[in-house]
View 1 (cartoon, rainbow, N blue to C red):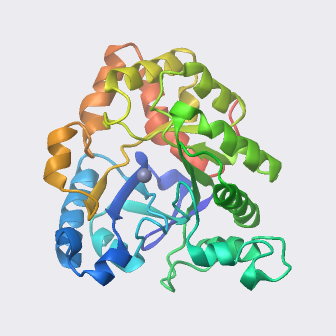
View 2 (view 1 turned 45 degrees about the vertical axis):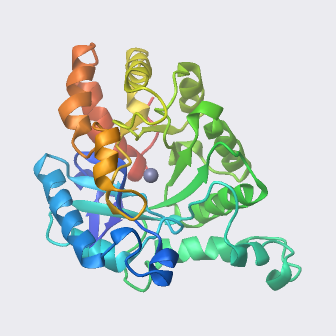
Length: 331
Ligand SMILES: [Zn+2]
């Protein structure tokens, strides 16, 4: 029995069901909304209504659980999340950590090791404590606990602050046992940097999920990450902005054929409502990028290409359960 926190309670890992491992309910810009209320047409009530409708449809489509990967840095707000989720029947796991590709916000820089407000302390303990608080006590005093810890490494690579962030996330994981789920840039093989640093911090890499690993034709890179122990997030399914969908599909099929499906999970990385872009424009430019793509398009295509039903089921159900539940590494 492994208890997993969700919005509105806790569930056993066996209750996760079909799970999308990297989605977003809201992507928002609190500082812009505070400075220019209604920036980009954003309205809290309208966004909540749209999200409730979409999450209800996701549940009706046969998905039981999503992980909302909206960490601070992406406008996480637990009150809005709670309003969006309540009554939809969908189980939602929320996360902590921090989202940036380059630098941490100024206060976190000034409070860094040996910095102005951190005196002679050579550690990032206070950063670790923020993440631990979200996992152990709950987010923003809501009592809703984070179920995973997130860090990012994109094309700019391991900058000084990204290195600090990965290490702080690793240390928060060691204190809480909450799994680590990353944003990475597969084209520049950033997942290997994340594994290296987390391994240095003493993290068991089977507790690490390297996200956005679908955006590559480099099957050997994916195998290297899996052989080192991690799960891979094929979690931008339907998103053709960076790598053609056919390439992503071929990578996934190749990994399944070679027996690696037990270490892969699926998701879309879509949001229900955002002030980042116009939903209408995105749907026009990226028509396959929506909450229904995996079930409506991807799974039938995988079966067509010879991926077995039980492999698909593992990616949707057993692997999320094993990873989030902290189960022993199979095989
Ligand atoms: Zn994301």
